[in-house]
Image 1 (cartoon, helix red, strand yellow):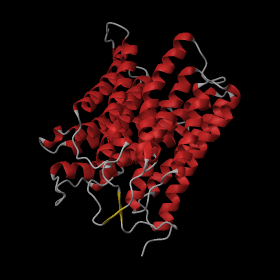
Image 2 (cartoon, one colour):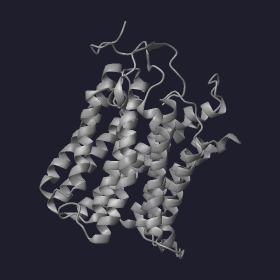
Image 3 (cartoon, rainbow, N blue to C red):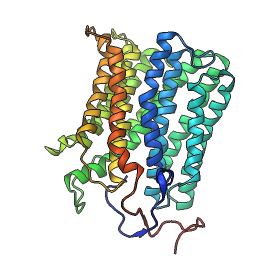
Image 4 (cartoon, rainbow, N blue to C red):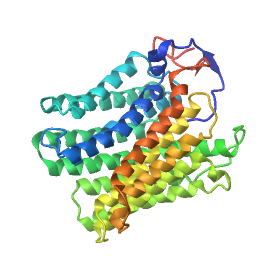
Length: 418
């Protein structure tokens, strides 16, 4: 996402009413939906574990929880990010109104089927998830073709991979093949790391330059080009090794390599005292958590004295979680006409999220913590997204300045404006 306004803009009327505002751009609708579900879902999982309640037919609660966090919670963030960033990168009008509500209806259908435990409607939830992913993929490919650009193709490729892995998970659930579902869920998680790596490479550069020079007259930060796609590339290699059924030692080394590529991205935050800006810290923290978690998971396969899930929890909760939180914060500021710099509640939320990730894995390393550490971790995780929603809802739910679009945007009939 860019940090500055377009050089030429065209005013359009303000949308009226809450529903009109929320459906004016993807981030306004899907970021709040994602925040609410991300905060709520862990409590439902704890409830299911504590009372031994099945959340879906033949699916253990742990697997369903992982599916709903990846496809559900992080899926909403993906929808909001791509429906906002893709039109900006291609200088086209974003999806608005009915199109966004249709995507939201598909996403909500997938969540409702799982939350209510409607065993007989499991296929409906699966079709809904496959439908919104397919629609998003078609949207990216259509924009790429229409604008003759390759800027979206990497995201489209990863989205296609995510779609295939999600379909495999649902097939495993449907036929009760838990081994297939477990492997496919890991591949879904790795696909999200590929998307995270791409998103970080697109976001970090303009955000860092904006922090270093708010006037945007210069671009003092220029990362090494080889670093931009290294993490997604090695995540893809790790996925290929996992899908091919390579030995634990080989696949472990591949996970370590992918993790090291994410850790390498942390060096992009070494920009002097400006590194203390909250956005820079959150972006670097996302890479650090993702990298450390993947390396811990890989080391477990090589015989390290901790469970593989320990590393995956750190990678998913800390890496993907903080990455999603960072996107919520940065896009929430820039796309509502605000300057960067997060409020105290939002910064506290980021700290809560990091503490949640640490608490989740601390007992696995012999730290004897007092109290219900797992429950505290869940509360901290949920509190972080509640704090974000509390802080950003006023800006997301109303418009005080008329939205602006590039004069080169497509006209109402879908053709390029003259």
